[in-house]
Length: 278
Ligand code: PDD
View 1 (tube, rainbow, N blue to C red):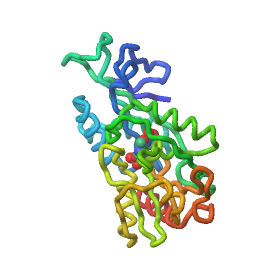
View 2 (tube, rainbow, N blue to C red):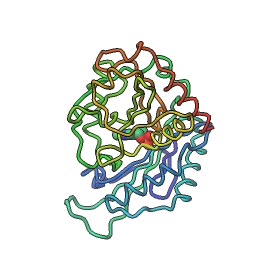
View 3 (spheres, protein in one colour):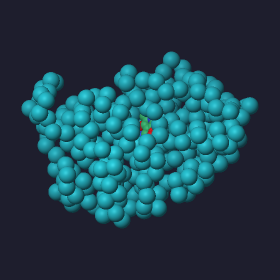
């Protein structure tokens, strides 16, 4: 596997980062994940725009213009022969003597790798996902795609132990988002509901694409917070992310959603998104 590290394409075994890197010591960095389908990046302009926004939010100068990022991503996809999966980008503030403060001369560490993954036709599309809820223990700027993911790691570990494919994070009785996804419900009246953007959630790129597709398909959209009991009683629930697109939810905390099988809206929106990506 070839890795992109600080300006060079290198074999994975040669991709080394300093233990003094602030990403390692402080989680002082951000990341981005774009899907690859048929060897092409999906919705990538929007992912690169969010990368720029995350970098600006923590005061790291973006090392590349979007066109340059896209060329590097495409070259990595080509070198790794990736047909379907994801491209991961990480930018940290760089290596320095450990100190909370930092000077102006740090050089950001830039890492990119690919991961093969079946997204279209993945088993979870047919089976649907069982999810569990957990308290949202994250910080107050979840709109920044920070590499500090300990709360999600802990919540997802608990979810996996409970046999669940994803965790829904809960704050004040309302779902913020999935551990690594955006949550949608379909109401009895057939409206699509998802939480509005704020510092409480990541502005999902798949979220926006799915909302546009739903609007084109004539579905009513409602951006508001969803209470856990509303989701459990909803006609349909699904979650979205670059790494899975649209995943139907069949149970929350052991309670079946609808008839306990993947719902038609999730299936349709998945098909529409795949058609758009192709
Ligand atoms: N995660 N919310 C959170 C907390 C996420 O981590 C993600 C994505 C999303 C969905 O965003 P998008 O549709 O832009 O992928 C929402 C990526 C895939 C990850 O951490 O691997």
